[in-house]
Length: 386
Ligand code: NIG
Image 1 (cartoon, protein in one colour):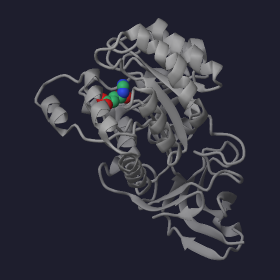
Image 2 (tube, helix red, strand yellow):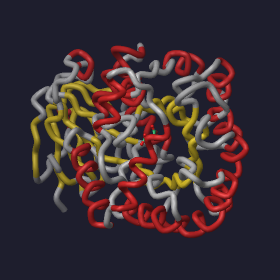
Image 3 (cartoon, helix red, strand yellow):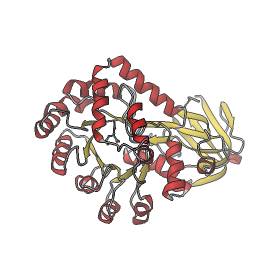
Image 4 (cartoon, protein in one colour):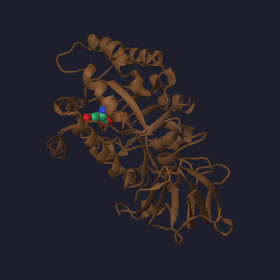
């Protein structure tokens, strides 16, 4: 059996209570799993040896929120926004149109290209969503394409009411024929619970129907203004509420008393010129926080988890270790992948061998050297991909 030992690790972030953060450490990868973690001086022999020469090693990023089944781009919309126009959820319709016109191969190539772009920057586990099809046929093919590439797939038929469609008729379609068609190809269902998209009752209907199909639940909420999204997510036991830009004290309290992860998407808030979410209030109340890119062509066109971590530290007052934890373990928790055999976002024996080696002595450099590419090597499921 081929095993690789990464030794000479200056700082090893495991996100595991037993191992913690180790100095002068080593880890062993066997096939697609972590086989051993400990001090470099007691590391076992292996067929292949990588000397980290004092650099930092941590779990691969877990990007738990992206929208990567799309065609086209929205450069003009972004440029207009940078000259002062506001972000509007209606821009989604532009991508819906381009996505419907695209062939399956074009959509799959585009998705793969973005997942590989992220992997080269240390992202080893990716969730992605449907939501730019909005017909039974286009949501189904989006779900199948997503399932062929991403680790986790979320059905987001309730992303926007297609222009010219009655909202209640559309919710009926999502809860009926659309869910029937896609449910076998996805693990999760999401709904955009926001003024201009779906209200709390409509969102609740979609989530209830999805639960009947055995899907896990998540909610887009409190992105563009205060609203019921976060509280609805807690009410239905959703794994995460994503965005959380406009949370009030009762939302924070509800999240802190629940198993629902608050997935913050700072790159989106910057790209749409919204305020940044109050990560400190969430953390101090005891809520679980994840960081993700929200990579999509409209509101957040970046695949860089490091950028999200840097922003969280420099502008959201998260400590480096909180931000790194949120971008690895937090994302895994949002996907309910943080425990058991093949867990992600952690480095311990039995976890998936998703590992990144930074060209830096510690994760502090992610904020200390903002914007500088620090990914030196990446292993995904035990294969070195960079
Ligand atoms: O998470 N909030 C809704 N959906 C995406 C926006 C996608 C788009 O503008 O195309 C988001 O920001």
